[in-house]
Image 1 (cartoon, rainbow, N blue to C red):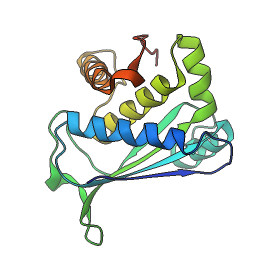
Image 2 (image 1 turned 180 degrees about the vertical axis):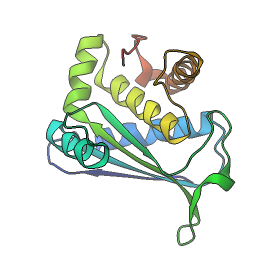
Image 3 (image 1 turned 180 degrees about the horizontal axis):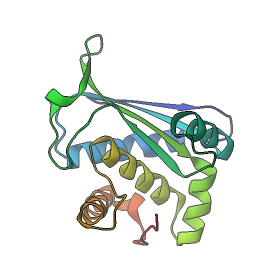
Image 4 (image 1 turned 90 degrees about the vertical axis):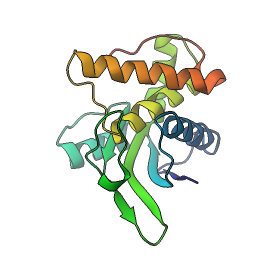
Length: 170
């Protein structure tokens, strides 16, 4: 069983409903990617100020964003290798990394893209899990196309949370 720890740094962030959406999206993405090992993923729910502070401290970027991903391992996209992962002997789980979600930005983007909040939270969570598993989209080539294809397939598995097929622009 996966250990998906969801935290918040401020009140009024839609907790625990959002935490439930996040956990479902993480589990679905891991299963879709063939991750059959018990894993730990940590998720921080925050706002513009919170994610801006993390972005500045961790990446040197003084700006808010929608989601940040911090993989603990250097994995190859589409080829999950448990031997390449950090391991927590206390919990008997692989450690995949951390993500930070900006919930007010999620609500704004949901409105801008014309789909629901649940879909946006689910999409950004799936997007972040793929980063934890070695996917990237920094170039406009094949890697970005593969990542987008995996996002779409996983969102289809999520069903109701995936209403709307509006593409994201990075």
